[in-house]
Amino acid sequence: MNNDESVKKTNSGLSDEERLARDVASTLDEDIAPAYDRDALAAAVIASQERAAYETEQAVFKEAKRAKNRKKAKRTVRNIFVTIILLGLVFGAVYAGYRYMANYYDAHFLSGTTINGADVSGMTAPEVKKLLFGVPDDYQLTIYELNGDTEVLTSDMIGRAYVDNDEVEQIMANQDSKRWFLHLQDVKEYTVTFVMAYDREAAQRCITNLHCISGSSVVTPQDAHLETDASGMYYIVPEVEGNTVNSSKVEKAVMDALDKAASSVDLVAAGCYEKPRIHANDENLIKRMNAWNEYLKVNVTYRFGPYSEVINADTIRPYIQDTGTDVILATDWIKSMVYGWGQKYDTFGLERAFRTHDGQLIQIPAGGDYGWCLDKEATIADVTEVVKNGLTGDRDPIWLFEAYGGWTNGDLGGTYFEVSINEQRAWLFEDGVQKMEIKVITGTESMEDRKSTPGCFAIDGKITDWTLGTYATHGYQAHVDFWLPFNGDQGIHDAYWYDKSAFGTDRYKYGGSHGCVSLYRDDMEKVYPVLEIGMPVVVYREKIPAQPTTIQAASAS
Image (cartoon, rainbow, N blue to C red):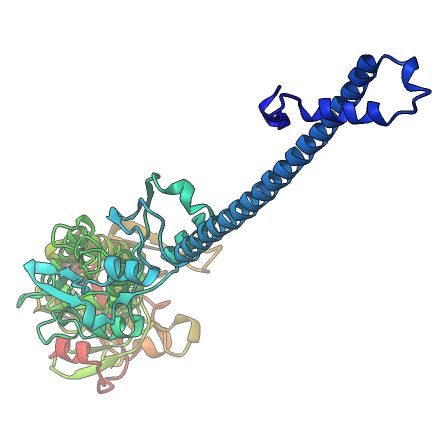
């Protein structure tokens, strides 16, 4: 029997089942009992009881098992509940720790973070900025100037300070703080820019006060230029480099350097200094100097007999224009100057003061073809050549007509023939000395077309054996041995048809010549060899006192 069936035997040796079977058999109806085998019946009862006991036992076992299972289930539920509680507590703690760290890394840098080479793990943005930018700003800008001079601008002077551009905060904002646990072993390197700003107005004030701008030793540069020496000639004055700066360029160069946080700026290299534009070796400057001096070396004296006109540096200087590129000599003034010379010195056909044989200063009326007459166009060209080439020395003007007798006594200072109509006399002067006094017959005064013409004339020809006039043209025709024409058909000649006694009388008033000056042949023979073509013949009627020009008065004195 199984231990757990709890079947026990009595002291009589029967089991409880056997006793039960026996009791059942004794109570059976006597009528029924014989029909059954008591033992079999007892066995059946026992078997029934055993089944019942087994079933009971099984029921008890099952109940016990169910009870055990219920107890186990309760324990399992409890364990699960406890586990859940524990897990909840653990999760809560872990989540709380996660949230704490996530919140922490919202305001702190993740582990392994470096900025500009500095480990900033676990640091806040202000702590990082203090670490990176909290050092004192010792920035200074050294300004290199001319001649090795320097000036310095410091941070304090220009109000320079760090400007927060939020780069540090941006790095923190971009870090994955919610998954901080995934980055515990990461190394994250960042670089931020030092943004420094300065007070531009303060910097500009500092620049304005730089010694190179406002200092008392500032020297203004000067271009090499031309000046004249004591003689009036030009020479080159060398340039002055100076040390003046262009303040606008200085401000730009310094401000650019400050913007770049440069440590220095070289004002010379930056081209901030005002420089002379023209140096002493400038080719154009040398060319201009040479041109000036070439013009100014001119020193020409034009000779007008005893008079002169000088053209020198003082004459032409007002007409030289220096454009800075070229030196140009204007020449339009030459024309007016030469024409002025003509007005001053021309005597051709003009009135003139003349001192007669007896010393009287009379006025010879205009008329005739004798005297000085300047060839103005040729002289203008000559003067132009002189001034353009800087010529020197004495020079003669170019004459269209020249006075044979020079410049004295109304251009009659040499050999000439003087005729007085009213006195019917003529005087031959040779080299200024009277050689003959001659009686003459001049043109017929009573006939206008036969009068002798007053004036000063040049002998136009010198002819012997000549016939005067023609019957066809003039109504007369006469042969002469000597003929000296001086005014068209008027001239000096011998006149055989006059009696010698007629010369020097009043014959001219009613029976004179056709305008010629007639001489007795013997006298004409003496005069003819002395007079040459171009020599003057001066003819006058009255001795009118002269009112000479300055030149004429001087020449007649």
